[in-house]
Image (cartoon, rainbow, N blue to C red; front, top):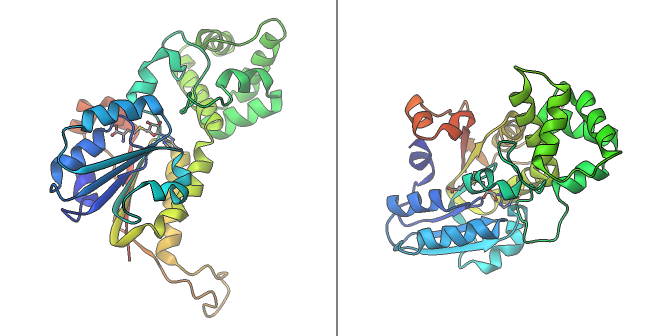
Length: 299
Ligand SMILES: C[S@@+](CC[C@H](N)C(=O)[O-])C[C@H]1O[C@@H](n2cnc3c(N)ncnc32)[C@H](O)[C@@H]1O
């Protein structure tokens, strides 16, 4: 796969998957690198880390995985035996474990509690809290901003009406409310957009991404590479703009005749356009169909 060709440029280097999930990428890193390489992982989801550690137990390399939001990478670095990397991966979104387990509440396909936390081991706010406690305007903003849902107002209104008689507790309740105001053939796409928007808002996904990207520049060794796999346009736009800014360096206003900020470029973009999966890749992994890969190299 092209990701490994781009990312794994030093056979005995140090690599980190900041979204280790079930360890699929770390396993593939292990198979494509020498046993002297060092592998690291981060994830917010304790259940995923447990599975990843079991999957990676037989790998010949040293592998360390930490439980934390990736935006705190600078703070948790002391838990690792290295403090810079030859390759960093961000594989955004959610894992198959999270989608397929109806108890996590991420999917409208099965009945489950309205949870949607990436880190349910913490005592944080759930999707149910968000839906029951947000104002109608806040709900409209969430559906519109993070789901680009045109019927945001109609859906938020229906939720607020329903809340007057019942507490929203399950994915089925939410699905029924949405289907009561959106009609076939638009229901499934709308459900997907609304569920996505709640998940993004609840887990602060875009803020996590915006916070972590600048921190990664100083964590890369010279010629080290940062690869980001994103699954919707909101994430991809953030990554694209960040890469462009890092490649440009200078932050002086356009009408300045000479640069006064003195900021040098720190990245060379290796993927002029985002790379998308081939038909064969989509056939083997249908969930990858919306993936976009961007890679940059530290100068
Ligand atoms: C697409 S999956 C990663 C799959 C993984 N790379 C693999 O090969 O199995 C995304 C993972 O990112 C994790 N995640 C999402 N946001 C996170 C954050 N801010 N900090 C840490 N992990 C996060 C999720 O819990 C999920 O396990």
